[in-house]
Image 1: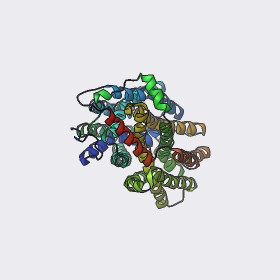
Image 2: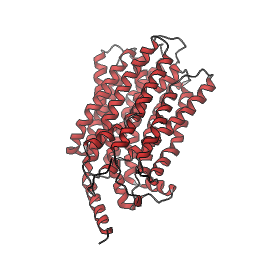
Image 3: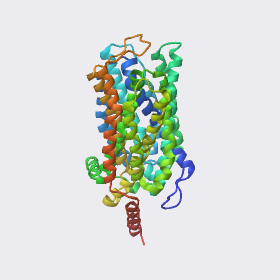
Length: 466
């Protein structure tokens, strides 16, 4: 698709917003299923020890520290007839789907063999996730420079993201159970993974066709790789935005990982898992659009404070929930948590393009890939830290891996149950409060961003030939 002819387009066509939003369907599905079910798959289906599973996740994220910034920097430097970012979507879609499918297979190997298999496949999936997701997210500032329009763009993106994650999270266990009824749970996971692998890959082709890039080859990044990374990290506004996102996403991923354990072993009601996930993600999807409207009145910071306050209260209430509480009360708390989850999706990503404009004013360069590469690293780091922390805490508190053939939840020790409740409640609340402190100190406001844009426009006008 050709870019709009206006030299400084502010509004984005609806079709472009839809195409852009569809690009987050695959990453959202993969993230949702891995967040809610990967550690459980490792421990209770593939039967890896929790400590071994968490080591796989830690090693994978160590590799992230290399591949995320690297792909971001490469996408700043390449120039093709399709642009700098979009070719990655076209050529990375199928390998990404294939790697996701392989992750949920259960090879008949010993403990060491299974550990090696899941480590290699996890590294492959992580790499392909980076290949498609970093250039995709870096498209955001290419589409509009408008402060509020970027919030709208991210609303479309995360509407697709949350809806896709919601559908995947709710229907994945249904597919697994349906297949397992006629076979076994391992086959159920394999069939479900095949379905979602196809669904993960397909939307990237629409995103490739329906978006555009207005970046010109003359603007390509010329700084050495290490110098570009150093300048990115030195950016004060970026450090705040990164801290806000990491803390928010760490809670999202930790709580997502714990929900299955919380419902299965504390409440002893695993059958309500789809309803709880529907309440969380469905509420987040609805509130995404509500927050988009409210942000135009109270700003991004105001939205963050309101939403996270609701989530802090919910976290403390979840710690207090007892096994004999009615199901409706648990679902109501899940829906209230979705109010804050929507903010965790929307606001940090809406802040980042403003940071990039400020960096352009200070350095004279457009370096979206470098910034988004590090942001995607934080996204996956939050997922990994959440899974790693849960695995290590469960292992340290005496979590019992169910024996082969177990058909009902076993009884876990009180120490493991208390750890699950603490991580769902007070620990999550403290991390969210720390994020609110960083938001209060974030240096970019709507007024300061508009001033940045005026100065950039003046600089561009002065550099044009008379």
